[in-house]
Amino acid sequence: MTKRVVLIGHPVAHSLSGAMQQAAFDTLGIDARYELWDRPPIELSDAIGELRSGDDFLGANVTIPHKERVVPLVDRQTEEAHVTGAVNTLTREGHKLVGHNTDVPGFKTALDQLVGRQKMPRAAVVLGAGGGARAVVYGLIREGFQRVVVFNRHLHRAEGLVKHFGRSAAHMELRAMPWHESIIEAELAKTKVLVNATSIGLVADDSPLPAEIIPADLLVLDLIYARTRLLRDAAAAGCTIADGETMLLHQGAASFTLWTGQPAPLEAMAAALADARDHGVRSAEGEPAGDDAQAAADVSGSAGSTGSTPGPTPG
Ligand code: NDP
Image (cartoon, rainbow, N blue to C red):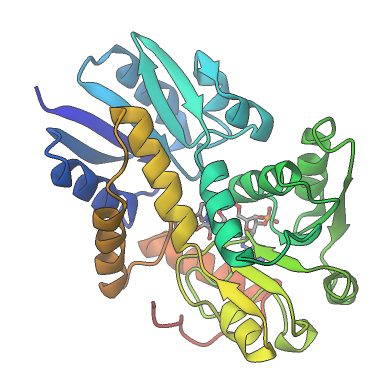
């Protein structure tokens, strides 16, 4: 029987996970198919029910906008899912579903690569407070960061994130601050790591920050899978930069291992990602596509961004 793994999101049409995971199954000769399920929030519970009862399912990925909504629908959560309050991977134990968060190990690999042989820094600025930012903040807490400042367009969401991590961050300073350029500039002057976990730059060539407030010696990670305007500006300022490829690849590899019990064929997955990138896809998974992409571009052109020219060439 051909096994099935599904990506549940809305929309999912332009997901990179499909190409990456199918390449992994095919490379290892596993008879499995990765399917994209576009399910609006109202259909999430039915989708989870179908997954729970179908013996041909190995599991699922969960993406925008369901990563937080799916939490109460699972039977058990791993520590990473529980602490972040977000689930991006489901596995089955009989007819029970387990929620995992593989964005956390994906971010750790990306951070380790970015820092390289330097000493792990202790201060970071995070832009964004969505599902991706939760994995980032948890990763920074676990890595031993002593000061993490979260900026978000809607301050209440950043405050909610900080409150959520209250206990795990009790030993360090985790703060939410309002999105004002002068405040961000002051914080950047005190930090070593900058992570963009907003979707600004995903569908248009916008940056969350004006180039002139980026200091020269930052380590800058953009979760978006492309050389975004932020990364180009940061590189021009003299920063060390990385895009979301490593995180995407390693969260996918961790999910693959959870479903199959086998080490993921990283090279084949990376090649499939590169191929998708060559064909112009640069979203992580389930990101705005079609009309939604235009809507998102319209929004990002009107709030918190610094440019409005067409999106960067992927790669
Ligand atoms: P969410 O929808 O949960 O969060 C989106 C975030 O972007 C929010 O903080 C939101 O702010 C902010 N934002 C969106 N538009 C604007 C705007 N115009 N101005 C200011 N802020 C804005 O998405 P995720 O957290 O899941 O994903 C965020 C990004 O991270 C995406 O680009 C995604 O591709 C990437 N990602 C990459 C991964 C990888 O493996 N490389 C893994 C996970 C995410 P507000 O709350 O105010 O709306």
